Image (cartoon, rainbow, N blue to C red; front, top):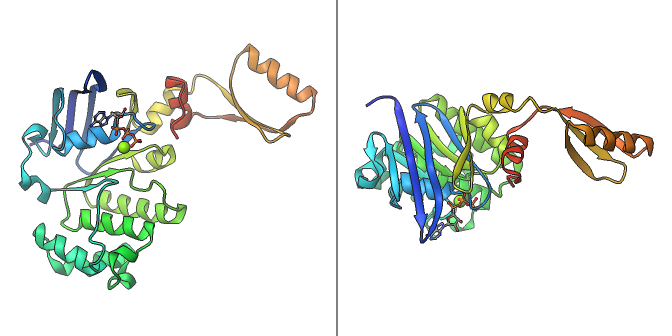
Length: 283
Ligand SMILES: Nc1ncnc2c1ncn2[C@@H]1O[C@H](COP(=O)(O)OP(=O)(O)OP(=O)(O)O)[C@@H](O)[C@H]1O
Ligand SMILES: [Mg+2]
């Protein structure tokens, strides 16, 4: 097998009459993080469900660790980890016992639990029933469970959605460490900062279509041709304007009326690229 841990080619998925994924192509090499970035309903979770064998594609192919996703059997769960919004924990079991249960299930050494709990900042809570953890703590427990057996590929469906910034940062740090240790991570998010920071490559997904694919730098550079201005007015409103005749006139008008609080030229970000390509906001 080559070093492409995930390969997706011409993947499409239809629910009833509607295509929710259309001719999706992407690869995830060993030791990289691939981000699927898109707004609600773009098809991110559907992609993860297909890759992990929970849904069948309508057409096209996808392979995880060389295995055809339409022929996944239970053995693959020893080599992959999955975190989705429906990932649960046994609420009455302690944090430690939750992990012990999954360690046994996945043939992972129980001796790995305490070091992992320390690493993820849950060691002091190890005796607490999982049901009494805070949201961020529970999310970290779910992540710990997904990496306990050192999977080669980790699937994360919006792993930091709804978490406070410092917990999100802790999760980012852990994911980058796991990547440096050789784990390949397939991440979905609608947070472009998260994608820019973590992902070697990103796919911008809109209504089931990949509208851009590449490194965040490549994608942003490609769109650097259109100069943009970010303006905040004295009434508190913010405006992002593309360069053009109308923009010059609008800014001149604001200057004349002394309405400008701040004015910046801005480099494209994945967020602005997405807006330019699709006319839609990510969040
Ligand atoms: N089982 C299903 N039957 C019919 N339609 C579905 C089914 N699952 C998903 N869809 C539709 O497919 C589209 C993509 O859904 P998906 O859950 O993949 O989006 P997403 O990108 O994960 O969005 P979010 O950011 O809200 O999680 C949506 O329009 C959704 O309504
Ligand atoms: Mg989703």
